[in-house]
Length: 134
Image 1 (cartoon, rainbow, N blue to C red):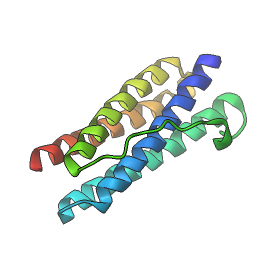
Image 2 (image 1 turned 180 degrees about the vertical axis):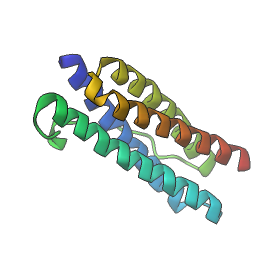
Image 3 (image 1 turned 60 degrees about the vertical axis):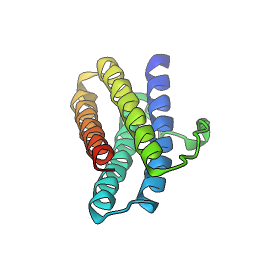
C-alpha cells in the first residue's frame, strides 16, 4: 500500500509541476495553433490529476490531501524552446510513472490508469510537434 501511495503522490506532484510549465508556454505561445495544442495538454494534465485523485480515493477510501504534498522546485524556463524541452521531459517521466502505477493498480482502476497513460503519450507527441515547429 505504501508503494501505491508514493506512486500516486509522486505523480500528483509531477503533474502539478507540469502545469506550471504549460502555463508559461501558454503565456508565450507565438501562434494560435501552439496556444490550442498547449491548452489541450493543460486540460489533459488537469484530467490526469482528477483521475489520480479518484484512484487514490478508490484505493485508500479518502480524498487526496494536497497539504500532504511538497512540490518540487522546478527551474523557470528561460525561453520557449527550453520550456518545450522541459515539458517533453516531464511528460515522458509521467508516462513512465503511470506505467508503473498501472502495474500496481487493481482491476477496477487499470483501465482508468491506462487511459491516462495514453493521454499523456498524446501530450508528448504534441510537444514534439511544437518543438519541431519552433
